[in-house]
Amino acid sequence: MTIINFKVDGEKKKKIEEIVNLKGYKSVSEFIREAIDEKMNLQEVIDDFIKENPPMDEEKIIISDFIPDGKYLGIARNEIVVIGDNLKDVTLKLYSKFPRAASGIIRKGKQITSFETLFSLFSAGNTKCYNQAKFDNNF
Image (cartoon, rainbow, N blue to C red; front, side):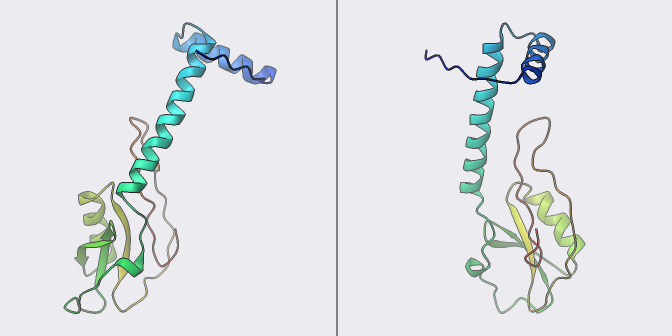
């Protein structure tokens, strides 16, 4: 095993020692190794997720002529997976059927009114990742 030395300020050292004591780690080194492993695992989870669920690319989405203008289209993995008459219904269906792959909603032939939304990137229970929805080029 390779040894790595690094400096931290006194306040951070106290906080690390408190965490070690509270959570029952055998040593500060054990805590630091676990924190590094979690960080590396998190990045791997994010990279795998992005590979499986690419961001929405409107140029790759094929909208068939039989879909009437004005319909809302739920997009997952650059494919139309939900079609509906209103934003609320399409959003509910899209995120219930494709919670990890939903990437956005577009409207055929019309613009969607911009609005702001909050989203959760990570669940506290486990490290599930979620795409950030794109509406009218706003995130």
